[in-house]
Amino acid sequence: MFGYRRELCRYEEVDEDELLASLSVEEIQELEQELDHLDPDTNIPIGLRQKDQTAKAPGGNFNHEALLKYWEEENKKLIQEEKEEAKPAQKEKQDKSCLRGELETPNANKPISKNNVKKRLTQRSKPAQNGSTKDDKKCVKESKSKVANPSKSDRKIPELNTDKPSENPIVIDTALEQILKNDPTLTEVNLNNKEDISQEILLRFIEALCTNTYVQLFSLANTHADDKVAFAIAKMLQENSSIKNLNIESNFVSGQGILAIMGALCQNQTLVELRFHNQRHICGGKAEMEMVQMLRENATLLKLGYQFELPGPRMAATSILTRNQDQQRQKRMQDRKAQEEVVKQVTNQSTENKTQKKTLQPAKTVEKPKNSLTSVNPELPTRKIAEMVKQQEKLENSKTQIKKPKTKKVKNGTNEKESGDILKELRNSLKPSVKRREEPSSLPPPQRSGRDDLMAAIRGSSMFSLKRVDLSNT
Image (tube, rainbow, N blue to C red; front, side, top):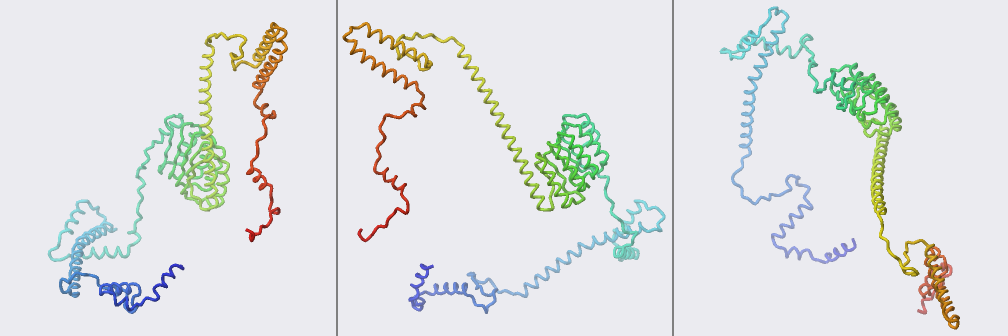
């Protein structure tokens, strides 16, 4: 901001009249346009503030009234064409309404055949030479009056087409037989949209599934199932151990039936997905709270097809489902680790067997020179090394006894010193590394530098020991 103000101070002493006098005509026009855009005149309406920017010359005189007349004539032509097209359609509707009125009259005791109806349609469809007849006018009036004020006898309720076959291609008898026989090929039972199926047949299916061990999906959406079916499903879930997906959406199950199914999940450990949304009866807040409490005792359900009305049970249900998913993931990871450990053990056993076979083969014998310390194998135990040291000492003592007595005194001293040094080196080499570290080293302690002393003094100092320094002397 301060820099911007400094730049503005430069232009305070500039003379505006001299600048305007130095501008050309084109530059003045551009400046006027920018000023109009930044500070427009409020007295001029908004639609007229923008100036004409077209550089093209006008091609001719513009007549506003002639253009309006042209569009009015075109519009009248379009309206007339639409009326002419709508007239034959209205005539056909009137003829059909007249025929219906004649057919529905209660005084018509004689049966009307199809040929007579066709003849009347052909007669009425032909254009009359001398205008419409009186009978036609009467038919039109009757049809209009019926449409305006229909009587109770004329009002008809549209009939439902209940004879339509369902799109589900399952054969109920064969499916029941396969379930009872425990057929391994049947893994899915789909009864969705079977509106003609009865409740007794549904109960038979559920009873057959109690002992089945191969069916994994059981779906009966939009089958008019009620609470009896729901209670039977709850009993079936307590006994069955193969069904993983259950779908009872769009039925007549109430909150009690759904709670019975949710209570059966405490004893079931195979069901993974449950769907019971869009029921005719509303469950309610209490039922939803009880559902959540029953869900907490189950650890296998991963998907729940129901939209909770209250936010509290909804959040609790999502947290429970995520907990179950995490537990399933951890189980999978543990199974993988166990499989990897088994594979490692098998490979280790195979390698050990190979090494044992190699060691059982006869090894080549190698002659080792006697009385030589350098030829000792480092892999031999320490007892053999001690025996070799004792034999070396005996040999040295025997050699010194054979020589002259004069040289004995001198040589014995030197030999004893050498043998003692050798024994010390061997003993030090045989000691473990931990003992060597514990022994005090004969080396002198390392010398400390001036920097180490300074750092030690800084670490041991405190704020109270500091003193002020006069800067005037410096």
